Each structure stands twice: as C-alpha cells, then as structure tokens.
Length: 142
Image 1 (cartoon, rainbow, N blue to C red):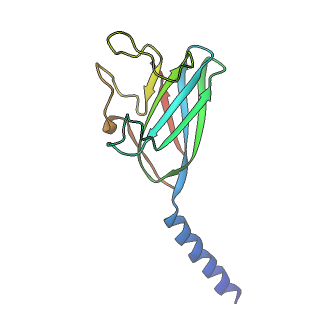
Image 2 (cartoon, one colour; image 1 turned 180 degrees about the horizontal axis):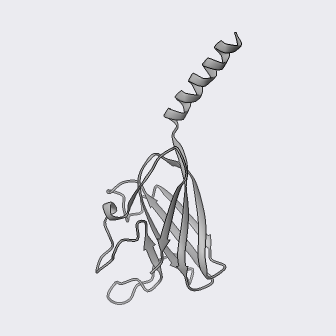
Image 3 (tube, rainbow, N blue to C red; image 1 turned 90 degrees about the vertical axis):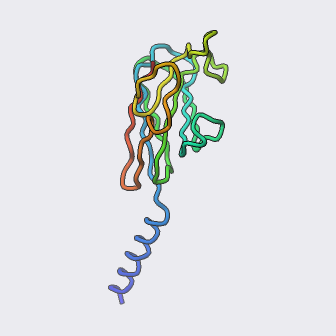
C-alpha cells in the first residue's frame, strides 16, 4: 500500500511539473553610474508585443547605489523572452531622448547586442528560459 501511494505521488508530481513549468530570472544590471531614480524592466514574450505596451512582466526597482543591481523575477514560464531596461534617473516615468530621438538615459537589452541607429530586434535580444533552473541574465547599461 505504501509503495502504491509513493508511486501515485511521484506520478502526480511529474504531471504537475510538466503542466505548470515556471521558473525565475535573475537579472544583473551592470554599469549603473548615478544614484537615484528607478530602473524600469520590461520582459516581452513574443516579437509582436516587443517594444510595445503589451509587456509580459514589468518591474521597477529603486537605484540606491552605483555599480550593479540584482533583480529577481519569479514565475516565468518556459519560453523565449526579451528584456529591455532603462534607468529613469529623473523618475519621470519615461525614457528621455534628445532631439534626434536617441536615448539620453542609460538603457540596455538582454544579450547586450550592438546598437547602431535603432533598437535591436526581438531575435537579437531573445533568451530562452526552461523550468529546470533560474536563468541568470547580465545586462550592461549604455
């Protein structure tokens, strides 16, 4: 009887883990050069919503020191994602830009792609998350 209960528990645990596959992201933001404001983090889960208001996950964190900041996001489902970050130094809720439309506040993307005259595409910034462990992502602010 105990063997049957143990086997049933194992089967149910396996079924649950395959139907509810979630994990987390540990994001390390590097090169923070000013104190104050908030780091705004947007996580996108497809190319259609990328760089739009349709964010999969959003997080804001107060910046209290120069250097690095670690943010942990929980309950991220298995899949492909893009992470976009900016340091809202003046806390006005938006990425400030110059008259040419270029950002004047620090920003960064997952995979740290080279940036020329436009934001990188979803595929350039895409990372994969699997349910087996937390995914570590390091993003350099520019």
